[in-house]
Length: 356
Image (cartoon, rainbow, N blue to C red; front, side, top):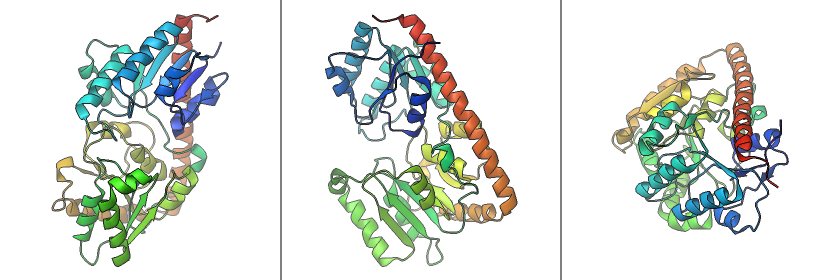
């Protein structure tokens, strides 16, 4: 079977990287390539463009991308991770882009049936989006032999994002009093623009870390590699996802990979990530997004601490056996995911025909 040349854009994400080498010949990818750069290229030497993000792409660029693809005889595949923007300010504008891609792409993936239903509501005349999970959040080899959870405190990590309510988390945690657990915060991919735009929040975190030995703050200006991220999480008692709104979360997948209890907003598409695969019974404290307030969130954090103690009581033998199972299941899942993408790509290639 002839394998198509597929441009994965952007290509740096763990799951996108896994799609490239196994099922494209040759691999065509660049983690820094933008849609504007792609549109400026005089010649497209690939058969399929697979778009993995709608963030920081204008509707005009998407329309031009589709028009160029039609003119070049190139097929357009899209994976819609989010139905609310993680970076952009306007939810309405973002949903217009989601509806456009859902209607115009030759094939659309999303992560859960719940998200597929939401996309269908936004683009009722489009072909249904296919629900296909990303699988392991880190490379399979980075999933440790034993779970990482311990009694080392609550952990939260990520870049500065409008939906990630770090100030509320820190202030709610402070309300727990003198017996509160440690709080470990990792800010990654912090840019100069982040430092200027979020100066007040960064000052709050740095000042709290200076005055309260229970808060451990790490600021990284790059993404951490998979092994480094796992090392940083080792010993945490629970992973906190202080999201005011979100569709899916790679951090929820990461918690499942690591056997780490998690605190997450009670959103249908997040629940959908745990309905298949290993650890469907992952210990989770689900909170209503409207309770992510300084007054209400301390109760959630208390429940999480209790949950973490229960999880830590598991025997090492059971934990090791469980983690071996997780790695085996995730490896099989990864194979199924990449093979399904290959099937879609090959089917689109037959529809496209051989280009001269």
